[in-house]
Length: 220
Length: 139
Length: 156
Image (tube, rainbow over all chains, first blue to last red; front, side, top):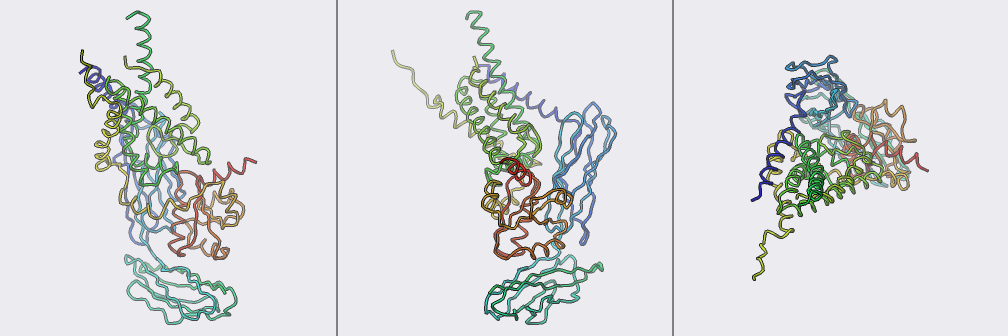
């Protein structure tokens, strides 16, 4: 076997090593953080800890995220070799539900960029099956809908009000554990197009009141 | 070998070294964060997310294998052909994506979206690499 | 004189196949063990809902002018500039914005969601949520988002 392959193997390993080593500077303890906020909390701050494992000071010049819901900030002063620090990220989930993932880009003065990922496990406060009820023509039969609330944050039902006279509740709403069962009927003109909504007001264990809408439509 | 021949041989090997180094560096860079590279590939909107992730773990290693394979006598021809194919493929992807109006940062050296040169520069660089590859020899 | 035997592994094709196969092993390890590997479980789930129902800006402008256009970006971005006629619908203020969308939507027109560009996933998230809450309605996502639209509008 020629010596080329052997020489080259060593060379490419060296290349690989130096390519990876070139990126050393700020080494992050974790580039992906998963946070599960307590039920009802939509805002949180995560800290991405890092250490300067290089031998020159490193300055962070820019931190960006792809979403207005994720606001990273960064220390202004250069980080000395061996020093530690953190990139704090303020997250506001808004009305989001379920598992959320956001990417934060950290750029240092030497042009190296590092991507960080923040995974936030938000509860599903409310889910509808379905959220839109479609009535057609002459149909007078009521349509069912069910609304499921997060079992991590139990709610008390305050009221269910149909906001449009063309529709009405066929039965009293029933909240069993965390599932609300509804039955709605169209009582307007069969030949008319109608749009309406139904409002569900609940109060959770933390005392917060929520008003959620379920949409109703009738087409001739 | 004549002095002229020796110089030419040296030149050809140097030419081959250029794509070698670039492939090795690109491959290594992508390996630091496969998830981010998968994101980059998804942004091209050419393959579904699962395929993008599979490519994201496979392509960097292919680049490294090819960079290595360009030199031993037995593998030189095949590695060269595959490297050319890969570069042509990358360039096509860039062109198609630009034509669809999707502004993609190439993700050529690893990292997620927003990293790396614009599509035009990346395509140009690929063409230059193709030329070096055609000209380069391992002897 | 006997011609030299051509060995099986001398064929360039076989070598090429070997070169293509060799990365599979380290790739497998990367997929399984790398601390930054893609999330395979989540991708499997996403495969079903995503990908279909995406269109390019050109097609959107020519065939979907009458769709209900929805802007999935932040309120600040929307107020700075948006596609004429598009409504803001993002997950920051979903509960407050959805009623306005429902008022405008005629019940049959397809919806078209766009956001900040190639690496913005808000439009997909909004599209998925609309389908989940409103049932099997047609919701499309604009490839390239707002920048693709702007680029198209800039050309005659």
